Image 1 (cartoon, rainbow over the protein chains, first blue to last red):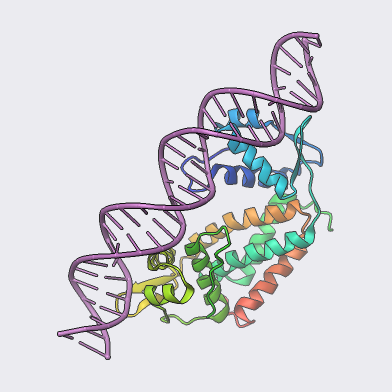
Image 2: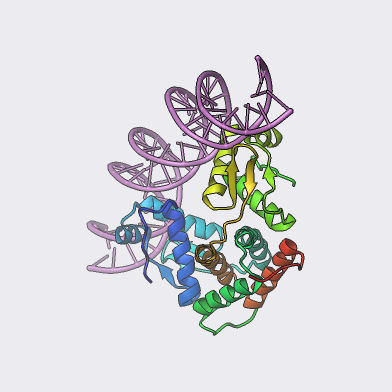
Length: 129
Length: 129
DNA sequence: TTATTTGTTACACTTCCAATAGAACAGATA
DNA sequence: TATCTGTTCTATTGGAAGTGTAACAAATAA
């Protein structure tokens, strides 16, 4: 998995790391139980401080994406809390779509964009829930 | 238009204001040329500082959502820069969708969510661009 | 057992942004 | 003439981000 921090971005490092890990899980379909590098290893690899990585991992734990295991590090463990996930998604989607609507982006174009991204994430191999 | 600041939110006031204005434009279909309250009026109404409102308006100007007119205040004026809008949307959608995918949200559910929000924004009266 | 690595926590420090406040300015309006 | 507009200064406070050093218990490897 390729992880890179954009040091010129205005986005916080730990947010960037969280997003990239989530994108990584979505695209490469990391299996339940796979472990991420330790906070120190990850920090050395991408060139940021240990505590910043720790914060990112803590956020992912809070979100239910990983569970932290003292023995195995940060283990991918997807909480299936779909009600909250859908509510959260509705809030975030609302703002993104509103921005698009203000720019005259059509409904079809959004659906197309969603399909395109979904194909990238799932590679067409989605088992419906 | 109902504008409210959540003082307990971790989101910056000026970001909240930007989002709410954009949501307001998307839902209530404010016409090209309509004016927002002056920075001082808006500040008094929602209970934040004048400069914070000014920053929000500046951001909206930067994004091409409004044009600032010394005579008429902040006037809604939608730049039609769809290429950049779609690129921006793809980036933001990617993160939102990835989070959903990690929570086993299906493609159909996302499409449904998009339609639901689009209906709320456009009320079914969309002219395709 | 010893040594190393793990996650975790605590304290300190710097830097930066958000937010507020007061003040002033030129231009437009009543 | 007043008033209101956006805009731009300066200043201050508060908090978050990020880094650094250090320590701890638990787990692992030697």
